[in-house]
Image 1 (cartoon, one colour):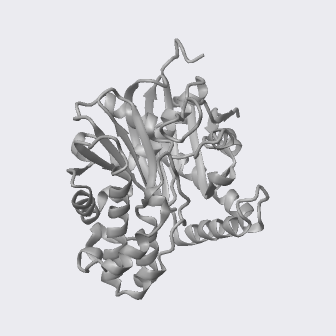
Image 2 (cartoon, rainbow, N blue to C red; image 1 turned 180 degrees about the vertical axis):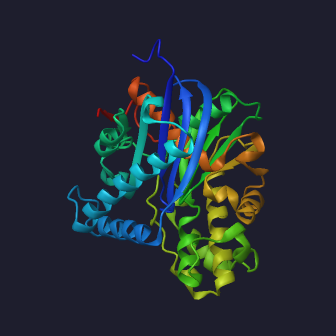
Length: 371
């Protein structure tokens, strides 16, 4: 299985732990090679939708990730489906396409709880809603089989990062660093072997702090953080967590760390401290590697924060650049990733590996629902 695969036009969708919107992207792939890149778009959640999703996350946490859906989780799950249908409808209209132009859809859903040490990962969203709406096979449930096999269930992007690097002339070893709500990296060595893990927060704690203090959803270009100074005492307290010295593979829930110490600081210093916390925790993760990377290529929403990238470069002592500098589109990469993973699900190819999630052997995963 997985041999003599046909090239597919796959539309991927991702709503990450930042809970700020849906990314959509079209690629052409046979599940191994990246053949072509199509259009991509972002759809931002309105305040009311984001509040419901955050409430569902809190509710899932309160019941310990139980398989039982609380009332607010059920409401949020219906919203997730409706928002993704709306995003895809807009994508097709904007790009003068129809669902007939797509062979397969990759639908991640919205993660609201992730505790792999307890064998639990919870994503909201009914893939059959997507499949029925567009009469298209839809791949989903990418994490469960990995967690059930003893893996971390995250990160899932490494195999896509490897495919991206394979078609580039980047120096190696190279690190592809995803800056979503949580930060995770894929380190690729001279032979193309992967090492990956979540390192700690990227945008989630900072976004929440900025929203609480200013009402704005995030620190635009890192300007608030750049106007303040990190508090070293608070930073040491935040970094005093055994996760940062634990060996990889390892993964995190969005709310694994308590940012309360930063809330004793001014707006500018609190933002500066949480930005430095993200950068320093990334440096701690990279320090575990058996080699020193030549370059860090940053993707995800945090790649648009030049102050955060400067801090990462300083803490890691490695040149850190946004994905656009190498011809990639940082905002589209996660959606492209789930398009690529959807093709691998369809062809029975592994999507997780011992050095990326800690699963015992390369493991196919995900499920596909037909319309």
